Image 1 (cartoon, rainbow, N blue to C red):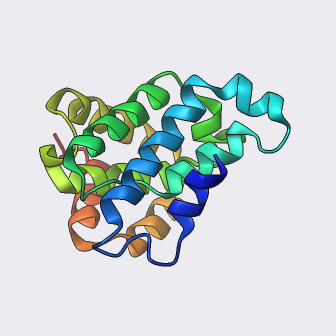
Image 2 (cartoon, helix red, strand yellow):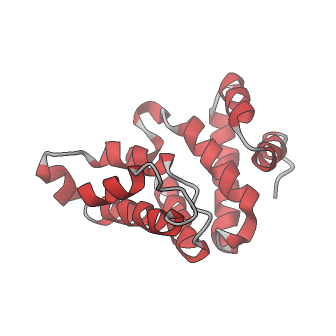
Length: 160
């Protein structure tokens, strides 16, 4: 895990030379947390809830289209199951979840399968119904234009 974190947090991690390797490390971190959480938690070094919050902060994946579909599919599974490590205690991570979902959906099916895209739309709609309007407006201001359009359409019930 330490090496994955070093790769992801390297100052040049998102440069064009290293972006695909970084995105693969982000995807691997998500898989590690999902499938080896007992081992991670038993180590006592880190907890998977903290790692999953960090993983979420590194999404979406865009450069490696194949790995993007895998990681975004994983996010979809975790959100569908209501995984507390992703949504956070008392749904504290939902604003960030909404932001990530808008960014993923703005990229289209290049980075998410059609099946997961449809599920992510439903999840986004549910998240937006849960969040206070102030939180939605705060997220809107921080999003790139295409993702803002997704958020606007979803908030008004027009995004499909």
